[in-house]
Image (cartoon, rainbow, N blue to C red; front, top):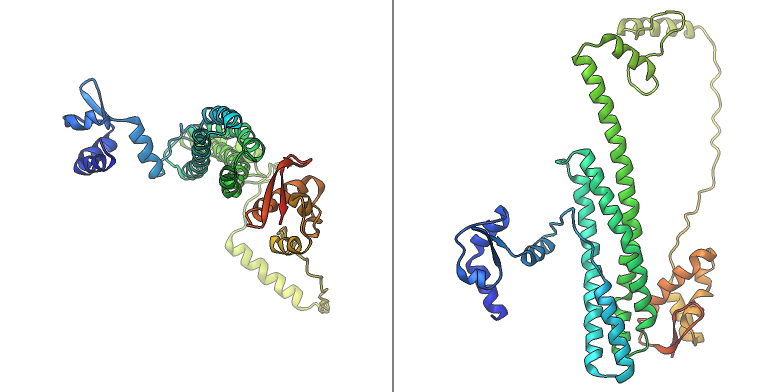
Length: 364
């Protein structure tokens, strides 16, 4: 079956397919839909193929809580194998295989980033689930996102070092996706912080709900003594409660009439007092300057054009634009600028790697 024929088949049976998608199964499915593997027969029912469901859910961004964020081991092993064979024989077949595997991994990173973002939005806005279930789901998602860190480092090292220098076309593809890949990797840390924050806030909400339920049960059961004991013990955190008096004095809130009478008496008392108005002196404070952590890559490029360099990364690292960064931030910020600058046509990559494990690029 051709692709155009498959599209026509889906279009002609769109109502039946949509009904099966919404109801999870259906009956009396035409044989041509079964032969095309769009439907599978389970007992006396017909269900949509899981591969089709995955495709639709991905396009419609309907991500399930049980989503698996991707296994990169298969592509990684295939890339390593084809790299070795290409180094031995330099055949076009192995280069094409490497390019396709890089594409596959890039799309996995792209889809994974979108799916996690959608999943977090669903988690934060879901009001249909019990709080304990929400916490359980958030913990599962956090565990899966944590597992991605190792995969990121493994694939990142493969893209930055091991595949560089094999072929100009491969280098060009890696260079064109490097900035986006770096952004997807950095987003993982953001997602981990957001999930942790969600878990903390949800636990607080669960604790507050338990307190409200406890109070409501006391009120409904008319447990006066228990309610009085609970309120007086928690007077610092609960509204409209007062501390228990050690001298058996009863504290009450002042009525509106008492407040009005007190205001009148205070006004009469203070009206006879001669008070000097204090002279206001407004101290002028120096405006704090906001520190901007923005690297002017255009300035670095202008200096590169003037001075040239045999190692662009080392030049960037020692440039005055990056002097404000601490030692532990310097390498990361220099590498981000390196990824942007090396897209320029004036950059030529060599076969060597510098002391920082980054491919040496020369400004021509």
